Amino acid sequence: MVDPATEEAVASVEQLDVDAVDAAVDRARRAWPAWRDVAPGDRARLLRRFAEAVDGDVDELAAIEVRNAGHTIGNARWEAGNVRDVLHYYAGAPERLFGRQIPVPGGLDVTFREPLGVVGVIVPWNFPMPIAGWGLAPALAAGNTVLLKPADLTPLTAIRLAELALEAGLPDGVFQVLPGRGSVVGERFVTHPDVAKLVFTGSTEVGMRIMAGAARQVKRVTLELGGKSANIVFADADLERAAATAPDGVFDNAGQDCCARSRILVQRSVHDRFLELLEPAVAAVRVGPPGSEDTTMGPLISEAQRQRVRGFVEDASEPVDVAFRGGAPAGPGFWYPPTVVLPRSADDAVWREEVFGPVVAVLPFDDEAEAVAMANDTEYGLSGSIWTRDVGRAIRVARGVQSGNLSVNSHASVRYWTPFGGFKRSGLGRELGPDALDAFTEVKNVFIATDQ
Ligand code: NAD
Image 1 (spheres, rainbow, N blue to C red):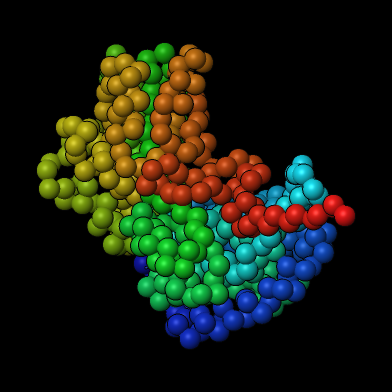
Image 2: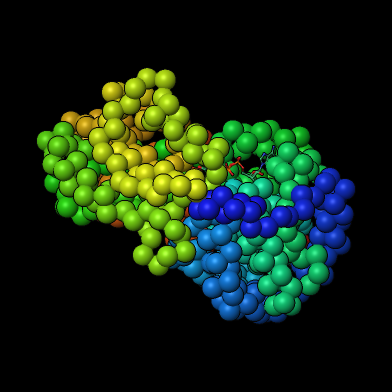
């Protein structure tokens, strides 16, 4: 593992092979019946203890993430706290896993929500802790055992979470972390007949492959994939606020965010004024050592990622007009400055493809219909923002944009109280919120005859 801010080695982690994965699946399968049968209140208590163990370790987990992923210390603390909060939230679920009683002739009909068995959670490198938590917490709460595969580049916090789970008293085999390559560990989750469900977060390309593989066993999948979200700014908006907060909406985590609002659509009459206001906001992004409290943006995850980002700007096949950009440290580290570009048209790669770096493209639109059409002219549909003071327009546009998570006069993306997931090629299924356990259980319907 390499520290992205210094390029120095921080740790080495053994990559598991297929035999090791099979052994772990076997442990998870054998641990399942006892975990399923833990009384709901006791399962809730164990999840709360796990949450408390994470809470007691927030600073250590955050420090690991700063070194392993280059996340700013403020973000990393929030991310560890998010795992704690999501565990607490779903600790309320085992005692509320209600079925229904359905009126039928000739007897009584009841439904049960049954856990599935072993759940495989596959996590990307951009938010190693929260994304792990969104899968593992509801899966465990529903009575499944969990195998978690962290991304090759960022396994360290996941490994620490598994230690904390054991310290909190989760039985052996209930939650295991399996570091390794996607093509080995991840693929084996797909092909192993004893893995009942896959929760995959990552690129659309790998997600499609996983869905195809899962089809062979009719294996359940939740897919959280890529995004190219629109930030739509109408002329009647609070332009100062829209411009001041636009960098947060796209440059958080150095733009390595599936919900990044990497396309800004601005109504033509205020386009130039918006750019004037955006420039100082971009200059104010503090790019630097991620461990410093006042840093607001750290490095990219790797040199390969930096090359990818350059491929949309400096090394683009067609020249790209850079409007302005912020600063970035020189020297070692995978730094890239926050950058605002003006594409020539909506056909440019920087407008259409997920950059996954601190690059945002700005284009004008004329009216509401054009804004919605431009926002929807993408294969993705994960997130987005709408800035306007007109409530009716806010609701019309929010209903019109084909995307799973929209915010009005805000860049909020993921809140654990509310469902999260994508339309179109951004994914399948929803995580978080009150219904998340639906994805980790199946309904069993039982008819009991009462006729003599
Ligand atoms: P990736 O698809 O390369 O890898 C994601 C995970 O899948 C990693 O753990 C990887 O090892 C594993 N993997 C790779 N090949 C595999 C295979 N053949 N079978 C099984 N597993 C395999 O994605 P990444 O580069 O780590 O992450 C960036 C992508 O993730 C971006 O597209 C981003 O938008 C997306 N993402 C989506 C969300 C969301 O919630 N929708 C959240 C974060 C990131």
